[in-house]
Length: 334
Image 1 (cartoon, rainbow, N blue to C red):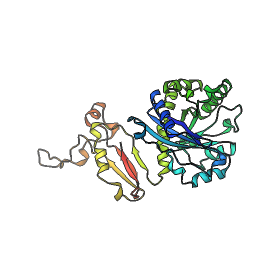
Image 2 (image 1 turned 90 degrees about the vertical axis):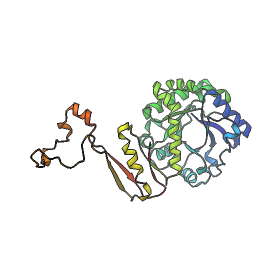
Image 3 (image 1 turned 90 degrees about the horizontal axis):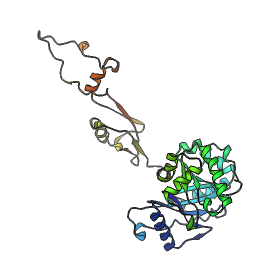
């Protein structure tokens, strides 16, 4: 995934044909997901442009996903307020913020402004903010990703040294969590394939598997976070459970109770029927007397041997799903 293909910077947007050529170039390199990035400086916050209008039919490639991204550099809380109130901002799929000072970095890390990506210009000699003092626990827990732009590693030797040094500091501060690696350059010769970018991640201090996630996987978290941010009234409750063939009853039970008829803050408790236990009436003995209920075998896990557990299956499981009466919300089972 490459979510930082710059198509506009300093109010200069590439022509439609050049944008299509760049999309095709990244697809040739091995990318199936491309984010068209529009960069806005702090002085142009009041004039946020429209997102680029590029469709798959214009590119002519089927197995490709195109998203629009807005990256805004902020220096004051007034800038973030104008971004949140702008109607053009809501038209973009991804919102990235580049803080220019410690005040704005603390606002983003404190959860006072919601965005999908926090990005930095790591190619400068000295950062205008103190990354080593920031606490990224809150944005990481909320799903916000932090971006390392590798475009500066190709332009010059000094920018390469600065990018690697500042990138290693960011990786160590975030403990390698929610890191994405993007290009962020307007020069075509800085474009790299996913495998090359994954190797660059090792120079930033990422482990091999974490570096692969930063290139191939974490971009999906950004896209998902952007959808939830733009549509706050529609959220999905996902049950991520590896159900076996004998546990398909859970999906059928959940689908049998539509979420539209549920009450607010109501809990649906679905209990798996006891496997191997008959629901028939108590059996009678040879003398005609019914057996006492206390004579039934106990179903406690501690009283069952491993062999009996294997025959009977697991003791009843209970899935609890939070439901809401809002028609925009739904219960989703995968």
